[in-house]
Image 1 (cartoon, rainbow, N blue to C red):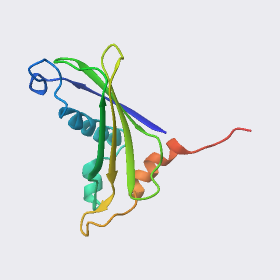
Image 2: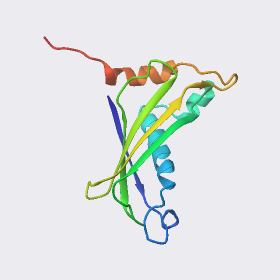
Image 3: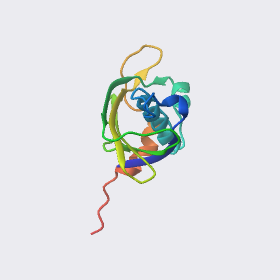
Length: 141
């Protein structure tokens, strides 16, 4: 299992008249955290685009439990529970406030797509090599 954490401070423009983060902004928070989780592995979305892979979102699910407010420092935990075996990659995402209260839960599914043909493909080898060690099941008997 691969887990990464990213922090984002809520900006005033991201809140509504009730001083609550507008629900549409969570998609951007999730994107920032996904991109940073890959960057923490030593790659970037830009690197994958350079090798001809794009990753469109095909599913986005969000459940709001508690509100976030202006100037809150949010921690977004991004979890990859399963190593992709085909064209899909699924990220579980959780948003916590500074008091470590769970605010929002999300799931985002992306496809690995060849940029030139727009055909589904498997995870790039460079990303696989970075992620595989987090999913190895070594037993110590």
